[in-house]
Image (cartoon, rainbow, N blue to C red):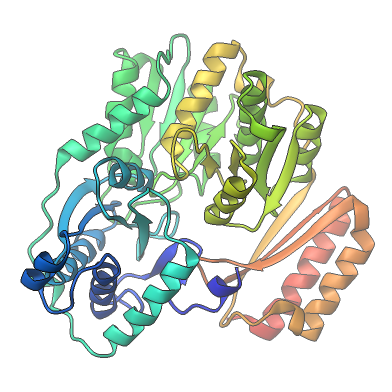
Length: 468
């Protein structure tokens, strides 16, 4: 976590910024492509010399639906090819599709152009290795140093002068086949489902996926927000706004709602009574199911510091331990691998199932949940009925810089006051976002009044010192 906090480019989930502005301007993007190619073993002397020295590395690109994604893809492809790499494109696909395809098709790396749940003006670059896992912090930090050096030395071509990347639809089809094979025999019979694709990457995959699962699609599945225009991604829809799908489930008398973020690497649910069901509840029902089938190694689930105390209590009642990792699915996975855990995830809907995939996959999570419902014969509300959630508030504060919060006297004093009063009846988690210029104040407590009071006190102290 320390290395991530001190970086200039990479956050907890790649590079993310307003498209066209530093550090997501054409020159820096071109430098990213060069640095990635160099890290894969190409020569700086040119494609011909590189081919003689080592096998030509291959890189797979994927992107979401933002209007900036095509020119960013073209810029990256031009840089990679100029440094001797072979580039192919899967087109518009979820982030986990690139991780899966890079691993199964022999690519040396996968690159996803997406800013996930961020507004359409933002975009980002996520990197995966040949094994389908996100690159380690140490590798990204070494790349960052080269990127910053290259960006100060080069002038990137005008993106408008570059040819668009050519997409291969076979990659998208292969990913859909993987999803179907991951949960064999899944039947949607008797279920009415609402699916919110957030006008993002899921919109390119979900219609065909659910058509393959149920030929009578119109009767069983309602697909929403499947018409991206480059600017409507996450626009009052998707996993960032789960109340939308919850209202649609109630209005259509459906059984379940599924909603994804812009790059479809996470999933949230909704029940039939306008109730939003987040990643904590998904972890609970998945953990119990895996334990019942003898697949929950060590009877352990890895969650994060943001997961509700109610999840920990419910898991304990089922004889399951919970370990908290730092926020960020890469850190959850790191702890899962170290502890040989079969399940982990975040409250935001990133669910990690290493026996099925190397990264969080919202569509895969949705199929796992649907399969669990079908096998159990229970509704989503029945499966989560005993999850008693502690009152929780999260306050986001826009900041102009990310100084260590405990080094600021007024902030440290407000945090101490909250911790001393709440003690065993609540939790205080203060952290910076790894993808945005935000400080997040999360307080969980039995007392609503105490929770609100301390959250506002800490937030006000941060605003006074660091606020925009």
